[in-house]
Length: 120
Image 1 (cartoon, rainbow, N blue to C red):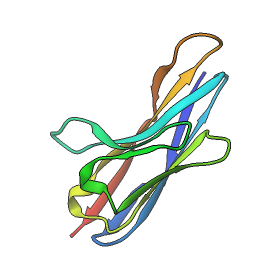
Image 2: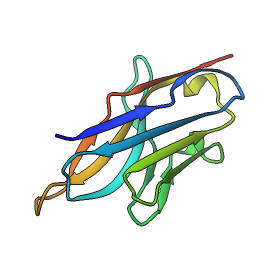
Image 3: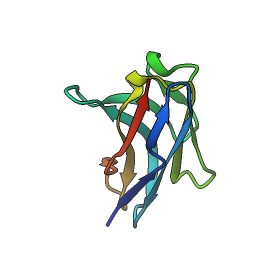
Image 4: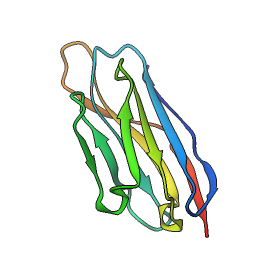
């Protein structure tokens, strides 16, 4: 059984900061990319930031310079430091991890989502 446990969402005023965290647990043999996605009401879920097992990062243009993605040394926890938050950042944020069991290929696993609300 695999679990991606997210935490850190909440309500914050515009200009404020939040840090999201997501920890993967379970009997997987390997973990590859981890990332954060978000879905606002009436919109499709989209990538916010991604970090590879080697530490390379990718950001959607709208968060560059404001958000920072990072991983712990064990590489099973991913963080998203969000600064200078804007009302348009309001969404449910989902963690995703590419996990491998035994010698099988990598599959995507999702967290349950955490709400981030930025008030103007």
